[in-house]
Structure formats: structure tokens, C-alpha cells
Length: 158
Image 1 (cartoon, helix red, strand yellow):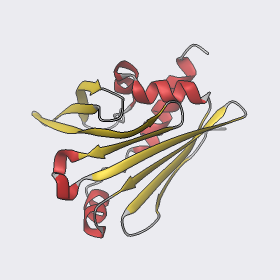
Image 2 (cartoon, helix red, strand yellow):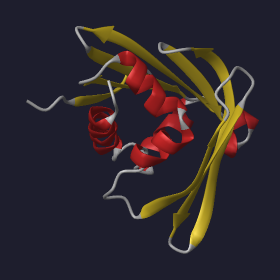
Image 3 (cartoon, one colour):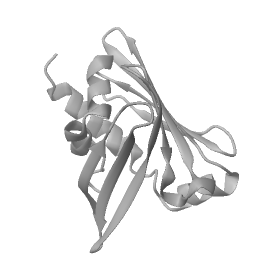
Image 4 (cartoon, helix red, strand yellow):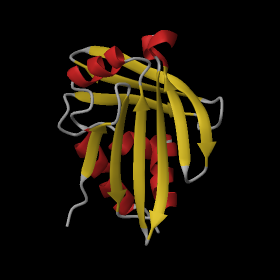
């Protein structure tokens, strides 16, 4: 049976995604923190965008930069890592909207019987910022993205 993804608004400013990934915590961690692996699952295949480049410097104070191609244009998403606890917790800023609009994303991974409970929280600076993110459709592909993550983890050497 396929694992399901839950996307739930927890408060005016917070959106939380949960998913159990059929695979060990360390492989899910590798998929989040390796530029090569991350680039293979992050963009939903059904989305009309492509990931052009992915740079991850996963350490506290390190930065990331993702460039996407969409409709002949390039968009960049970038930020810095706030917390890095190998295999269990990763937190970063989403700085492309400017300091006042920066959301903070936190991912936690907990292994249970060979599977990993993934919880991803997006904390936005205001209710309006979360409303705008939801109305833009930016979270619509999340279940597909999590399916792709799980499919990738299934291919990694155990």
C-alpha cells in the first residue's frame, strides 16, 4: 500500500507536511542533503518547471541555491541553513522574498521499524504570506514530490 502525504495548515502562519517514507532515516537524509540526489526528486514531474541547478552547502550557516526554468525564464530560490543535526533535523531560511518575507522550513526525520516519519514545517512571517503561498499553488505538488522522494530512496543502496 502506498504511503500518503498529509499537508495541513496548523496555524495562521504554519503549514506542516507529514509522510512516512519506506526506507531508513539515513537514506532519506542523504536524499535531502546531497545536491545530486536532491535534484532527482524535488520538482514534481508533472510541474511545468525544471531544476536547472542545485547547490547545497549543508552546514549551519551554509547556503543553498536552486534555479528553476519556467516558461523561458529562470527563477532562483535561496537561503541559509540554521540547524543541521545529521540524519534527524534540518532547518533553513527561504530568503528569495527578502528578509521581511522569509519563511523558515524545518524537516525532522524519525526512523520507526525501517521506515522514516518525515515532518516538514513551513513557518511564514505572517498569515498573508502563508495565504499567498497557498494561493500560488506552490504546495499542490507536495504529495507528488514526496512520492518521488520515496521512489528515489527505494533505489539507494541500503
